[in-house]
Length: 288
Image 1 (cartoon, helix red, strand yellow):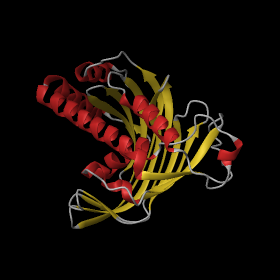
Image 2 (cartoon, one colour):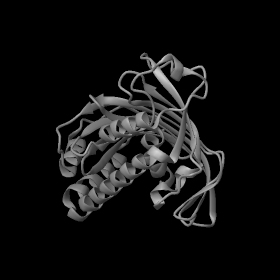
Image 3 (tube, rainbow, N blue to C red):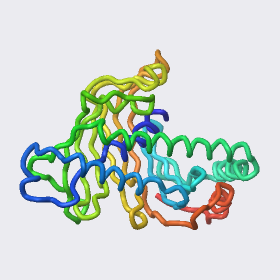
Image 4 (cartoon, rainbow, N blue to C red):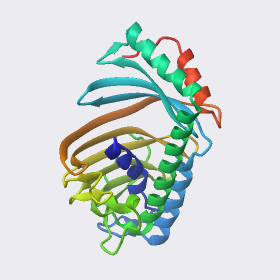
């Protein structure tokens, strides 16, 4: 879970650069991206990911070593809530459904649980914004030779390679992993919003000095973002393959693939309790 959280924060983080206007000379091989443009895109990404008062629902398809799970999730300004609707391609049975409903009712009834989720959401937002700001100097950005395009995205894109800046020194735990990550990102050429990131760890790096997690070289991440509301982004696809050591002694292979579909914006300021109630009242779904 810690690695997923780290990478989820890092997606909007890593992807930050590129052009307000593209000219022919900027499209040359290994052409550096001007710092003024990086700063502009950083601010656009901050604005796009802040989402402090937004709420939206989506269906999350997740596959990992435990199998395939589909959940209806609701993101609120105060944290997320979810209801599982299928496992291994089958709808939940009566007992499993009852468990999901009971869990959601506990969220509604427990003020401490709501406060815990709200704090976790606020901490995550704070770390994300901190790392996004650090990306102004944490990476070196160059235009990718040949400017390959994402076939699944119909609009023109700008492809940018990024690698760690050796002159960058992290100032917090949240920034530690930035030193070992390189890859390519794709930006919408018109809006300058990030559409896709392909990242890899080029060397071992630690999170919380290696006490919490050590990520080994060779870890990969692929992610895509979609614009669910004008100027507002969410992750539509995420795939992570990594080898890591947890809490000093346990080495594991971590693989997950996630895709969000059926995104719908909800009323701004939606509370956790109201979101949980919506999931309880949701008709019994039979989603593959």
